[in-house]
Each structure stands twice: as C-alpha cells, then as structure tokens.
Length: 441
Image 1 (cartoon, helix red, strand yellow):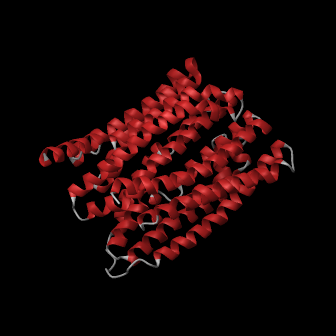
Image 2 (cartoon, helix red, strand yellow):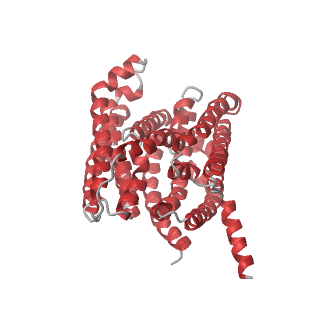
Image 3 (cartoon, one colour):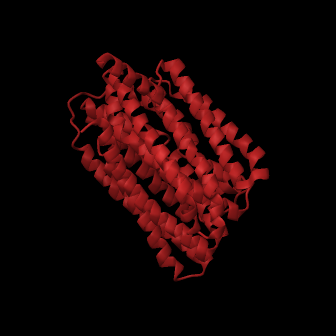
C-alpha cells in the first residue's frame, strides 16, 4: 500500500473515532443549550477551555515531543532511555496535579477570580485536567511506538461516552445548576480512571521495545530544549481557540460566546482530522531524519501535506454546506455561527499548504525559532479581536482568528525555509512530482 493510501486509511479510522466522540459531545452541548440554556453552555465551554490550557501545561511540554523521542528510542533499541523519559513526563503530570490541588484556589483568589466558574468547580476541573494530560502523554508515546490508533481512539471515544453518561445521569436528578456541578464531578472522576487504564496499555507496549543500545548521557537537557518551547507552541496552536474563548469572554455576551464556542469545537474536530494525517506518518518522518535521509524526509512531509490539503478543502466544503443544519441542533439562534464557522475552516487550508514548519524546526534543533512567528499570531489575534469583534461580533471573531493563523503559518514557513533550508510547504511536493515526471518523460 502506498504511503498516501495508508495515511488516508489510518487517518480515516482515527478521524472516524474522533467524529463519533465529537458527535456525542455535540449532542451533550446541544442538550445543555436546549435544557439548561445557552448561558450555562457558555460557562461549560469556559471550563473546558481552562481545563485544556491547564492540561497542556501539566506535562511541561513532554507530551509534545513524546512521539519524537519514543520513535527515536524505539528505532535505536533504547528501552531504558525511553523509560527515563516516561518517568519525567508522568512525573510532571503528577507534580502539577498536587500543586493545583494545594495552590489552585489561593492563586485564583490572588488574581481576583475567586468567584469565577473555574473557582466554583476547581477540584473536578483539576481531575479532568489531570486525565486530559495523561491522555496527551499516553497518546504521544503510542504514536511514537507505532500504535497511533490506540493513542487517539481511547481519548476520542471513552471521554465523550463519559461526558454523555454524566449528563444523562445528572440532568434527571437535579435542577440545572446542581446537575451541572454533579456532571463535572462525574466527568472528572470517570476520565481520570480511564486515563489510568490507558496508561497501563502504554506500559504494556513499552515492554515490547528492544533494549540493546545503552542509554545516552545528557539527554535530559536535550528533552528540555525541545519540550519547553513546545509548551508555548502547543498553547498557541493546538489550543489557540481555548485562549481565544477566554479573550472573547470579555467582548461577547455569554450566549454569543456559546455560539462561537460551538463553532470552535466543530473546527477543532476538522482540525483533528487534518492533524491525524501528520500523526500517522510521524514515526517515519522522525526515522528518516534520524537516518539523515533528506530525500525521504521531504517526500514523506510532502505527501502528508498533499493528503492534508485535500482533506482541508473537502472539510471546508462540508462545513460550508452542512454547518447551518448542524448548528440548528443547538437552537435557532446558533445558526448565526454558520458563516463564521466556514471562515474558520479556511485556516485549515492555510495550515496544510504551509506544512509542519514547527515540527521541522524542532527536528533541526531550532524549536525556539518558532516562537516569534507564534507571538506574531497571538498579537494579531488580540489586535484583531479588539478591532473586529465590537463592530462585527461573531464574524469579526472568525476573521480575527483567520488572519492570526495565516500570519503565524506564513511566519513559520519563512522561518523554517531560512534557518533549516527546507521548503516544507506543499509547493516542494508539486516541484518534486514535476521533476520526476520530466525525468521519466
């Protein structure tokens, strides 16, 4: 089977699992909007955004580079080295969990957020953040160990099932406000338990790694050099819209925030489908770089870009046509988000065309070089929200996000081209195919 077909096949399975799970979550969100009100849905989405941002910080960046180092140590038969990496990664999660439980509320009080929705539900939110962080680390390691389906499917399916179960159990037993609190507790505890089972599976796969080569010295500094910038990179890219929701909470009413929040969740699903294309191919990309095989590296990145770009265009068309009908499930007022959602999906095309520049910079030991472009994107977002949201509302928020993502994607491509000497955009794939056709003809 060709690489492109394998990528499309495995990505389809991963995306299908994500679609199933997201469908359950969307049903829950629609029911919350219908039965508990759009304002309470807005509160729920703010908690989810805060949990996502906390969870991505808990492993201190080790989840973002876990796939890379797991693939490297598996290829080099260095199981003991991988074990040390895993101890550090999971140790960070446990350490920050304890810190949050002890100092979380005093910190919120110190910054004037003692009455915020996060402060009111801090413990279940921290448990959910712990579970999410575990899923991130588990998934990254499994991707690097060539088990991407196990890495993604558990989180994609079981967590939404717990969310659905929590809602169904609590909504019939208490008024909305109390049911909301009880649901968060059930979700937090349930997801934490599932994440531990997922961790046990990681340990099982880890034991199958060969242990021939001796551990390398001074690897800890290398891990931190890669991981620290990826905390910021991950926050600014994978959790871009969680930051955006928190920024918009001061510019939009709770009902409008709920509409935009639903749009960003739908966008996140589409973005996951595109990201799965790269995730499936990560081990081969890492191995080709480790073997100094530049030609294979560029070919595999180019083919992944081509599949991702085609999928992005398809998803944009699907969203443009189907968004009004999907948003109607949340209530008639939510159809106002149809056009803003289509605008958001244009950014998927931009990201796929420009390629995985941040990844390439990290592979070439230049992870910090990504930060200026990402900083430009975040500044563009803040400025765009301030200028466009007051006069244009939801559409202004979508346009600000599109401009910001375009700015950071272009900046990353230029940075990778100048520092690593690599064109990781889809253009190099077209040029390579053209050159091959001319050579064959």
